[in-house]
Image (cartoon, rainbow, N blue to C red; front, side, top):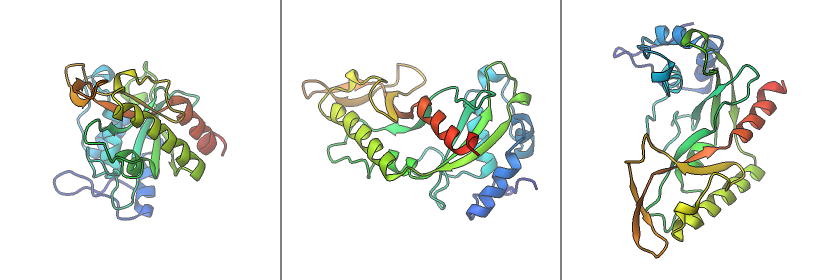
Length: 232
């Protein structure tokens, strides 16, 4: 089986779960070099210049269509895609970026109305062997699994969200550290410190601060991999 393309070299979004599973089974076991060739995607010069390349390539191969919108990557299926770089023991190499965390116009913001909720409700995790010393030929798709939070996990996520946004709403965004939150963290997100956004300051004034993003803790992603991949 190959990858079905549109005429403009874009790959159609999958129409149903069966088609998505077929595409997933096609990419498992293949290197990033092989997938780039199949999808007619140019390779980065080297892995140092290719940060984010694996995720973008797999999005293209599977037909993800949401781009950077605050909706799941496969809107028709309600599925968010996350590519996880792992080592040979399937241990994640970093925390997982989930979505941006809005910092203004949040007075009536709730967990259920947030981009985080729409992104975390059903997640497709794709594991890529990606230790830093490997070139693209040796970076291989190792497997995948779907994740839907249980009611207990949703409660923890909601508590994490509420704790973090209570700090944002009360002007304490600069006091948020990566230690806060059981499953998710809120951390600065951006290529550099020059990009700023508005937020409430400690005295109720408007300040400018670095954009923030929600990340799933590496230890939690590791736990999910153990439950869904290593336990089978």
